[in-house]
Structures are given as structure tokens and as C-alpha cells.
Length: 92
Image (tube, rainbow, N blue to C red; front, side):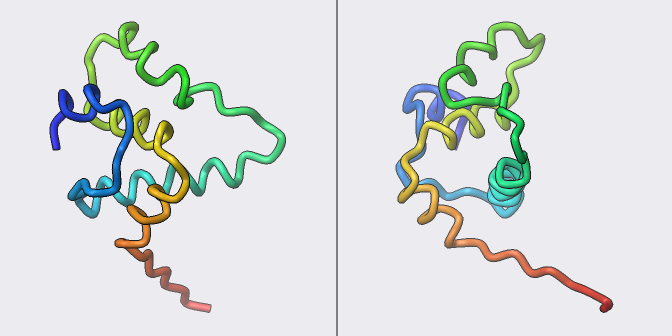
């Protein structure tokens, strides 16, 4: 998957072959959003992710991937993340 492909589509369709690192990044994004409490997400947001890329010195693949992920429907997000399960280790 390339920067241009993601930008062209604007969202993910669930058929993408995401790497483990990409899935981890998207899972981190969801987990951080759930921990936000009463705060509102400013960036990245689904409506402004593609708009703000013009203000960055360098266009980064991760930013466009996050923007596309945020524009993706919930059932497709679940399908994408179901492919990857986190394992947490605890010494307790």
C-alpha cells in the first residue's frame, strides 16, 4: 500500500495488507482515544487529517494512514484490527 493509494481512496476498505507495525500504530490510536477522558481530539481528526497535511514540511505515510483509518467505517476498523491481537505481559 502506498501513500498515493491511501490518499486517493480517502479511507480503508478492509482488504489492505497492513504490517504489524501499522496495525500496532492504529491500535495505539484507538487506545489513546479511549483514554482521552473529557478532552477532544484536535489532530488527527477524520475531517481534517488530509487538510492539515499541506502544513507539514514532509508528507508522512503514517499521517495519511491514520487519516484514512479515521475516515473508515467502524465495522471495517474492527475487521482490520481483528487480524492482529496484542499480547500483554505482566510480572504481577
